[in-house]
Length: 124
Image (cartoon, rainbow, N blue to C red):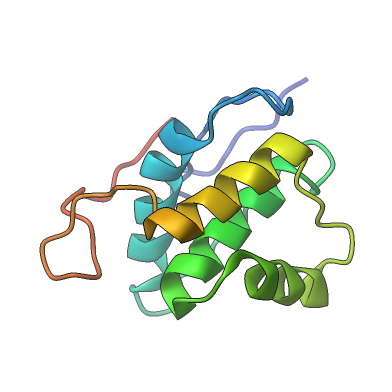
């Protein structure tokens, strides 16, 4: 039995399997702007979760920390693990996160050098 999400709660569903061969890019292009926009609003918080709270959600949080604080993968991984010890992206996600560090991000279009030109969206 699925629980109803209250109307006042905005959510974003990103469908990705927890396999090393899956591409994180489509998830990051949706999740990072959503998180950034939510956290820019006073009093807003963000819950990022997946089945076990280790690989998929951990990867999204790590990518956000890397972007927000302009830090590398290993520093972001340490920061994420300070809050949730079990964060452990699978080997393919780790590689993609590290590669994004080397590339300078996920290739999001930006208008001011910080915020992408994507708008906040309500997904049901």
